[in-house]
Length: 258
Image (cartoon, rainbow, N blue to C red; front, side, top):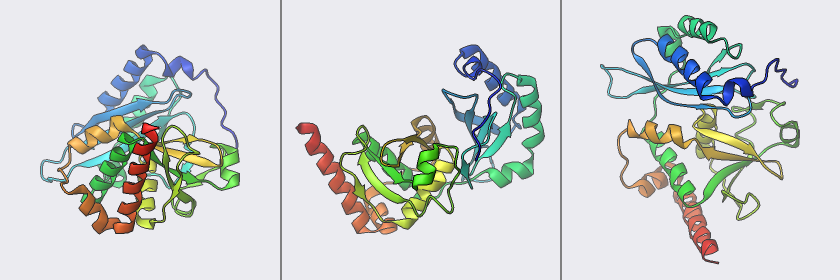
């Protein structure tokens, strides 16, 4: 994957409140009447933005969501669950027109998704672990890690085979615990592809997966509560899985007292 070419200063359109407001207005006015913005975030180093859309469905008690990416370059992830729209950064009228053309009922149905009870308890676990300064990491292949986003990461082929680790949020070389749970790892890859997790490269070919809190929290508020979280996680992923993260939380608490 060749390095992307940017023909403008991305900071011109990313780091000013005025341009963000213009882009938000362009997006909101282009949305169909049954779709609204639940959350959004802007990249710091490029003209990319991400939008969590919610589809209003009066006839269905289960909401549908859609991840919209607006950027001037392609995403380095393959097999991601995002509707990607390319724009010439700063051309707000053009991106508004493009969105109106793309956001048809068929496209909304194709790219939108619902979250199951398993999704809800998994996302709540991710937030629970973060409160204890713990995050998930994957160890990339040397080729992908060295390329730093200039080599595609396939969420169907590469991500499931990567080594999954549970580790300290602030020190990626501290307390790394290997975890083998393919169903859980598959869901992490899916959330990463929906921008519910965002990534940071670190040493030793590790990719840190951090929760996009400004997306997950409002999203979970739209969904039913999940009491007895630990029991549900044990039923879904096994008691060994629960034992690993409970022990990691205990060790993390000990480290904080040192």
